Length: 133
Image 1 (cartoon, rainbow, N blue to C red):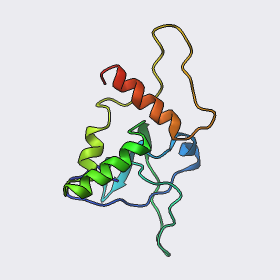
Image 2: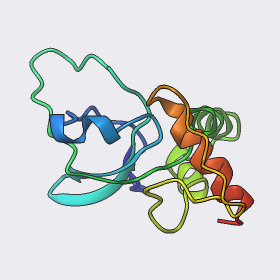
Image 3: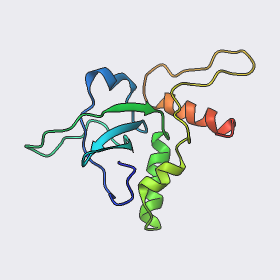
Image 4: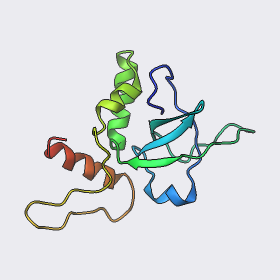
């Protein structure tokens, strides 16, 4: 979903192999759109593109964005109140790029989920909220 007010829909992009480990639902990325490189969010994975369409690759992973539950909430809210999903996603994304989990102030290790799924993003989002980000 590009962060462009005039564009109110999601597009399909190819995730290059070198970025695949860092891309989850909620990841903030840079994409090429009509000759401009813009911010966007990954809102779905493993989507089947239309037949005969050559996908452009995601240009860069910027950092973590909102967890999947918040993306679903943004979609629901935008539909319910006729708003823009990308505006709500922008509001739920940290102002600065979040690229890792913050350390704990008590010295204990940061708990990480066993799998590399949306749990990492969710943990980072909740940790950022506790820190007032």
